[in-house]
Length: 192
Image: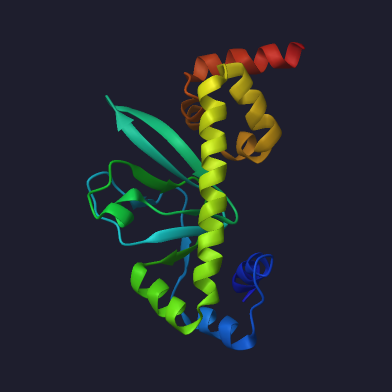
């Protein structure tokens, strides 16, 4: 019940839910508990699931020449729709749990059913998608024009929780640097 309330509180920032709508969501088999290290999607697999993090942290990453390259972390109240779900092609990357997590896992059939019963959910999803796209574009632009030290400082400012929650080698990969470089950057920042 507490899990559902987290979701309802988040949705209420955008739209009002009546009891019928809350009950409809609660009746769906979409709330899942996952364990740290659990793979949600492997490279080469097709996906028919989208993820919304209620509690915890998941990440997406590629394996390039045997090395993991983390592209994103998704934490509380963030969603991830794998490209594979949209383009119906095998995934080029992995999705795994960084922490024990509680995820809302949906698929196109569930979403279509909810949109038909409750049209305002479709508008909600459109608004949330637009917000995600805007945030991703800003993050991407910032990453492209920043030095590794500036990227770390941005992370400290905008996502300080990740510094405590995520293993350092994954954090370094996300910043586009080696773990040793991350250690040097952190040492330099501490001296300032």
